[in-house]
Amino acid sequence: MVCALGIEGSANKIGIGIIKDGKVLANVRRTYITPPGEGFLPKETAKHHREAILGLVKASLKEAQLEPADLDVICYTKGPGMAPPLLVGAIVARTLSLLWEKPLLGVNHCIGHIEMGRLITGAQNPIVLYVSGGNTQVIAYSNQRYRIFGETIDIAVGNCLDRFARIIKLSNDPSPGYNIEQLAKQSSRYIKLPYVVKGMDVSFSGILSYIEDLAEPGRRQNKRKKQQEAEVIDYSQADLCYSLQETIFAMLVEITERAMAHCDSNEVLIVGGVGCNERLQEMMRIMCEERGGKLFATDERYCIDNGLMIAHAGAEMFRSGTRMPLEEAFVTQRFRTDEVLVSWRED
Amino acid sequence: MPQITNKPNESTIRVPFETPRLAEIAYRVLSVDQEPRRNFVKKTLSLDGDVLVVTFQADQVKNLRTAITSFFESLLLCQDTIKQFGESKGDTAVRGNNDDNAGTQSGSDSA
Image (cartoon, rainbow over all chains, first blue to last red; front, side):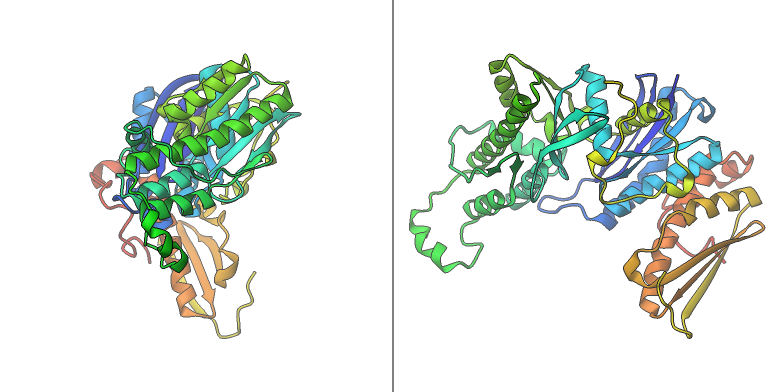
């Protein structure tokens, strides 16, 4: 019996979750939404989190109908992520841990996503595609580690989508990716974009620059480009959204398929904020079915950053005997998925 | 640890808490985070009964300000957490609506 409270605040979401033996008791979340055309900055995001976090802790306890005494462990996101928002979660977690006299555990954000996905979908040993605003990784489990098979060599896929949404001034509510997905449904006109897969790795920054030029020709003062302007066709925003999604999702499907073939696996699990994109899920499902495999995916409650995933991963760590002294309860912007010893899996 | 010259800019903040236990909690919570390597500030925390004592030393006043500002943000959040979830009776009821703007004012609770 492990009852855990988890605090997540590594990016623009602040969430608290409570889980007891794999059963979801509470999952509350607030998102810092910026005006169209603007991204979220560390300082402002931390301020948003500071104002929301204590109310969320209260709300989660109320939803779970628990007293602090019922908890076994307090978990928080140790990294990776933006330092100021991470610190908000860490400070509150440390204080609660001492006030309530409960053990404290720092959880790797990526591990949280993977374990949450496995819990909700029941996937046993899948190839994991972890796609979000800060991370893009293809992961396979082997020998007590989640090993990174392929990843982005520059920006994350969600970062590429978010930044494109800013260029064309799409709303950030509920999320830029969601609005791109909706707009893309209005088009089926494919514009050829660069397709950048390098072995098991992918790259998105060049695609972003290319599509920026298409979206706003003349924004850059490039003489050679100006000569070509005569042949520039006026693409609609929907065409661009559609083409961008098709291109970058195809790249992700390709490296995921290669990982499946390499590991002889027939399960794929998609986690992370971009994972709730239904077009990505559809493309991945087609690939899986062609190989006789199966796709596992979750909806926005679990694949977008949430406190529950931190609570669940922390509970697994706690159950397998992991402990952490308070002096080690710091935050770290860089914290790779394969640094964590997966002590709770027996396979 | 950064090298501080023999004439440093210095600032000491004394933050009283309701009980020595709560002061110790704040001390332990706030001792974890190291100053970023490149801000050239030396931060020392200590306890004086129910008072948390924090001393900052830096060669440049500008760096001192940055360090103190970010320290206050953590301190206020820790204090608010204690106020709302600490079990000391009677205190939370008197304060009433302490959710409002709790994280934005600095100075009034300290020294």
